[in-house]
Length: 207
Image (cartoon, rainbow, N blue to C red; front, side, top):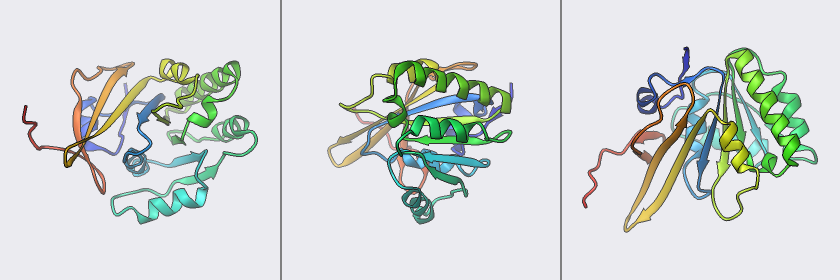
């Protein structure tokens, strides 16, 4: 099975070379975290369509340009208008072979009627399999998680769960991979350092 790199070397090694081609990944993270760095790193791997539902396309592009770490040059489209699900669907249909798709954040689409959102995810999954691409759905954790998040988690082939906590004077980021279709989920979390880019935190935890 061919694997697609995430752009994060340590994570790709842990996952046996990357994510299986044709997969949908849910990246669930706190709103006040550096989870956006995962998306930035992904854009370095191959052509990327970045659909933004809350921030403007200009804000996303500016953030990519200001990042001192490596980034690609994705095509950014704002789909957060009156019919975000329909707009996203029409753009997904035109994705070429082997491309990345980022939906940031998926929460807006998850607030659509359940049957319509389910159809969107099924169509997206079919297109990813046919084009051997990779989709990352960036979902926010917290008190206002949409009702359809369970559906997203079930349909996703891979789930990345980023936990960010403030522990005294330290910000601790741990990544769990509890779900991995077509591969091996990780038994332990990975402690990460999220600064200019995503790296492993090699500091020792003291009990």
